[in-house]
Amino acid sequence: MGALPLGILAKEVTTAGRGQVKALVESGGNLALTAPGSVEMQAALKDLELLVSIDFYQNETATMAAETALVPTVYILPATTPLERENIHVTHLNYNVVPHVEYHGPVVEPPRSGPRPEWEIFMALTRRMGLVPFGNKMFGILAKFLRAVHKDLSPGFIVGLLSILGNLMEHHPPRISSQAITFGSIRKRGLIVWKQHRHGVLREFLLTRNKKVHLAAPEIVGMLQRFMNAIQMNTASLQAAPDDEGFLLIGRRHPKTMNSWLHNIPRLHADIAGPRLLVNAADGARLGLESGQLARVFNDNGEITVPVELTGDIMPGVACYPHGWGHHPNGLHVARSNPGQNYNVLVASSGLEPLSGMPRFNAIRVRVEKKG
Image (cartoon, rainbow, N blue to C red; front, top):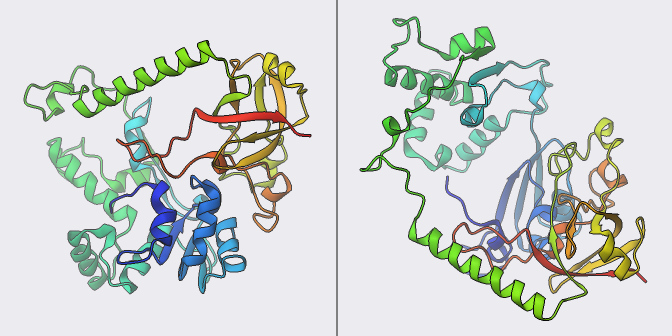
């Protein structure tokens, strides 16, 4: 499917000419809040001709596109919740501490005329747009064949196909070997747990000629060297002329928010206190700040005003604020009662990290002062 850095999206929308982005489909996203340089992203919405939001909720992005940016066509396509669809977490299998595969069928059926699983929505969109699934011609041919026999290119079908290939690679042919693990057996049992990982087998799977993991790529080594030089220069300059107002802003996550996805769940939201800026107690005393007072956090990209919490758990010269907040009054119904402020206002959409193309999200230079 390919990927592009989110930091350049606003400019891709606003830059006229060939290749200008005129339509966006976002799934479970909220670009107006989560994109770096949020103010720039919000302003870019007005240049769109179409926005499709696949979500449980009418979020800030869809609302702003329709009511503020006046995008000509805005669709909200409701997706099913995890309890309304089958789930098998194929992409997470490599991260299991205890190796296992787990399957859950739908607990409740969605309304017949209501939400649809995301894969159904994407398959319908690609078909009507004349595109092939996942940008892959083979998937396109496979999807046409399946439609001819009244079947779908569903996640279950793909898992079943992968299980067949995996069994053959492990020399356990399905229906012949008792050790074969098929999608049918996974669905029937619900949970299959292996007793232990195989260890000492990495060389069997490495494709490098010398059967070693190559970590020291020249691009990464060069970047690390420039990074270390920058740290040394910054440390030396701060020691020579301490910046009494300058801070490095870092983010954090609240376990009950899951970034911003759980902000609109009433039962969880009731237990979440409003986000606060963590500041070292010594810095707070120097700035005349006390816990609960408002502080202005700003840089060349933007500013936010947030309540402060003084603590000894964070280093002097560092401030910490969680991302995913900044809900608008006309946004999510529950989340807007405890909106917080948007960390991404302070993040630049330019100056992307050159290797990954990601915005510099942590250790952002900001100033902090008591709100007058």
